[in-house]
Image (cartoon, rainbow, N blue to C red; front, side):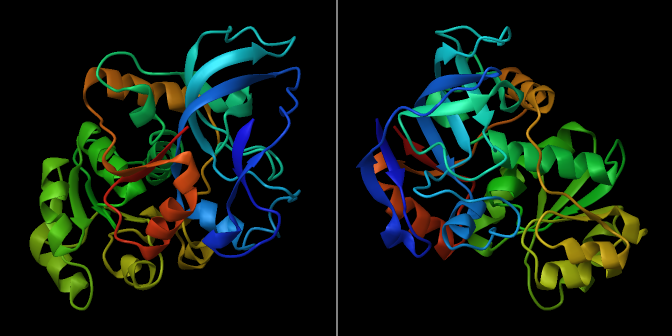
Length: 307
């Protein structure tokens, strides 16, 4: 099968288009013929070796944790899916080796949901799993509900665009930090944009009429430092970037695969209450360019990779 893989840690140049054997399929897994994947910042962090302390790594490594495609083969214990089913998945396994930048992807059933029907195509749906689940699980950790005022840091990014929309669905008022070029996107998604940088605390208090209920950190750095000053209760600061948020009394979320959560997100796509914002699409052989674009930052929504 064709795949993107690397046999050493490094920059985007280590990504190579190669031919690999068909991956093994476990008893409770399926083999997905991939239609698309997407790039998340964690992909290039893994490629650079930053997650070696958290997962066993086995070279050659196929990058990617998002997939959309069609089930080609099922393991003997699988009852949830059948060959021919269209699926989406956040295919994070217990080790790093068989990722989703490949024609064939081995996926445990716990990582998958049926793909959306209706207006969202199979390629576009590949942008949903990791970022959508991160947003949903962060909102849940913060206990966001009707009447809350929620501050979303990096509101125009991959996770941020989903968080703005989902918080809006939950009945919250949403403020989102964004650059000038991203302000209209935040408005279109149901949020109220704020410029990030110096003076953010005053801008938040002026717009919200005081402290907010929740702050969601999707960027780290200064955003996390200032967040406890902006909320009524530091326990409702949630970061998906930096575990030291716990030292401030907040919550750290590392997204988990969840078939039920992913099915919930697919339902929002089908209902039209959620959409995938696509910044760019790259063919598989240009995966290195997609990684470079992600590392440059300032991506509006998601970068997709077609297979």
